[in-house]
Length: 81
Image (cartoon, rainbow, N blue to C red; front, side, top):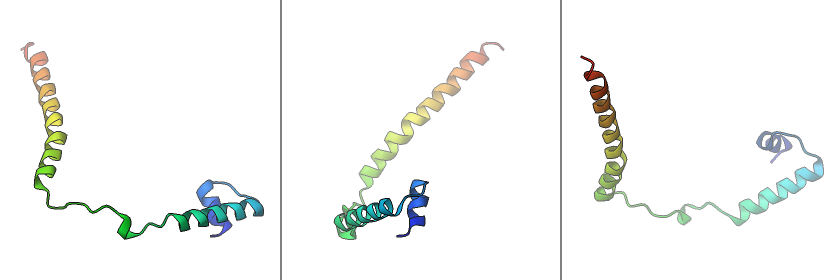
């Protein structure tokens, strides 16, 4: 890590002592919290029912809202003709 790295991240320059503290804290944090692939939760990829339910929960309300807006526009502007 260089001082330029911390300047880029935090947007300002630091004294040598502050830089050393930042570097020490950064190194300690990265050593104590490793991001190994073994620690990631295993995801289920072939769960069709869950994917279908998620899609329905997402798209059905949006489609209903669009249909409601279209019917509202027809009701509002269709009466003038």
